[in-house]
Amino acid sequence: MEWQQIIGFYNVVRFGSFTKAAEATFRTQSALSRQIKSLEDELDCQLLDRNDKRKICLTSAGERFLQFSTAIIEGYDALTEDLGALKNMREGRLKIAAPFTTIINFFLPVIKVYREQFPEVGMTVLDRSQHNVIHLLKNGLIDFGLILDSNLRGELTSIRWKRVQTVLMTPENHPLTRMKKPALADIIKYPLVLPPKDANSPHREDLERRFRKFKINYNVIMESSNVELSFKCVEIGVGIAFASVVPDVFSTRRDTVALLPLDHLFEPDYLVIAMQNERKLPSYKSAFIRMLFEECPGSRVAPS
Image (tube, rainbow, N blue to C red; front, side):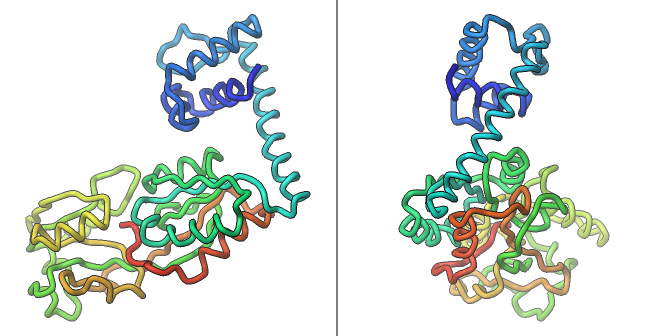
């Protein structure tokens, strides 16, 4: 019996899907299926009931093996942290996930400094959407996630990191730049670049609910889930865009695009460091959080 077989079986049951388990363990679906079949051959019993193709069902033997694999994995995690304590908490594993824009604008300098100070730590950084970051956190597949507080909806434990404002991106000399506090009724007269319609993110739904109150037809010329893409669309004149930004970086890139604060229309949000629970962190993990709160050169825009 091999460790990867235990991990594979555990994740297939946890996610209820070979496809999702394969993605979480960075394997192909066929390789994962072969691992579990090999495990069943070794144990000389069937762990999964394959009669129902629509969902993962465990046999009685599978239920018992799930208890075994869960205990093994939880014990391994506890052991690695205990061993880290014996080594002055300088060794261990650290997995972080965040959206692309957060990684490239805020996180890259931290990665460099952290790896220099903690070379013994196995560090993995994942580029994932806000929703996928939350999914990974809930399933214990990462240690920390960097996401907007509004997307957590009261779930998980979080530490506020950076204050975020909603702004309107417009070309530098756009008519809206001459308004001190542009109203939504004025904004929706122009072609809009909006976030995608996504059941996992309430931002687009909230915007359209506000728009409908004015009974004015509005034109969504493009959907963009990335601030960098929205910025480029505004820069070349495709439309104007709503975005979430960190306030102390308003002066960046003002040569071609204006960022108009919409504090009079939207409450501020926060970029947070989210984790599964509040248990005591080993020093190499708490050091990562500490570094995030130090000044990060090159910081610009938060995820929209």
